[in-house]
Amino acid sequence: MNWEFEKISYIFWLLLLPFLVWRVFVLYRWKKQKISQFADISLQKRIFRDVGLKKFVRNNILILCAFGLIVFGLINLLAGIEKKEVKREGIDMVFAIDVSNSMNAQDVAPSRMEKAKKIIDDIIGKLGGDRVGIVIFAGRAYSVMPLSNDYGAAELYLQNIGTQLITAQGTNVAAAVSEAANMLSQNNSTSKAIVLISDGEAHEGNISEAVDLAENKHITIYCVGVGTLQGAPIPMENDFGYSDYKKDQNGEVVLSKLEDNSLKKLASYTGGSYFYGGSSEEISTAVVHATSFLNKKEQSTSIAYDSKQFFQFFVGGALILLIIVSLTNYKHDFNI
Image (cartoon, rainbow, N blue to C red):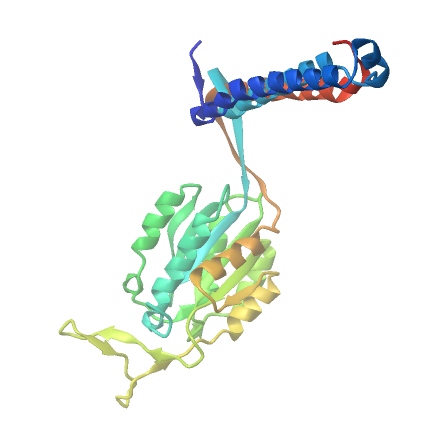
């Protein structure tokens, strides 16, 4: 069996032991000398009958031993292999991302699309045992990533999402909820949530239909609004590859604004919450906190192998020694 220390740096605390032992014996000699100077041997027992120097030394030695054991507990002695069963608990969560052209607007830095992706990335970074999936939508909705515990894969999928992926324009929230619900229906034993991120503009589809579908599937929807009420023009690519802005039939630049009434209703009617404003970190923290109240079920069980730890024996021994010291007061005995 191979023995090793997990945190060997703590071993330097043991260098204090020789000094502490020396201090105890110096103090013992000093006490004994002072008692001898104060009174004759025949009077010492009467005057100092409640002081026992031998117990004083013994108890201090026990305390020093306890100190040494605690240090070894901190070092954490490892040996052998231990088989452990690891259980993952969480919910199923689908991110529905609006990829319509209006998400290119730059009224939030660097753009609505990039902020939406950053919010999702931050949420994923705060999750534990939850499974996640990704749906994109504009005039239509498509699944990009099925439910999985592979957060690294989710982040890779997220990097490649953009407004060029769906040519059919619009913001069909009902289609997004339907696509996400189909993904979530694969597992009925855990809580289900949809985190829908959109600017809410140019809604297509029936919101009440989306609400009914979510309620029937027992899905809670959390909506995040991106954009501002003041709005901004929508960057477009012209035939020459240069940046331009979307214009209406009269040649006027179209101003895209956040329209969040439907998002608020969708979240409210399904028992979720609506989030708007603040940094990506603040929004992601609020979303994770809100979803933490959903009932988490066991998602998976795996077997892990790890080194056996023996710190508990050292800490237990130190505790026993300290209990002995507390029960034996050196002032009850004079025997030197």
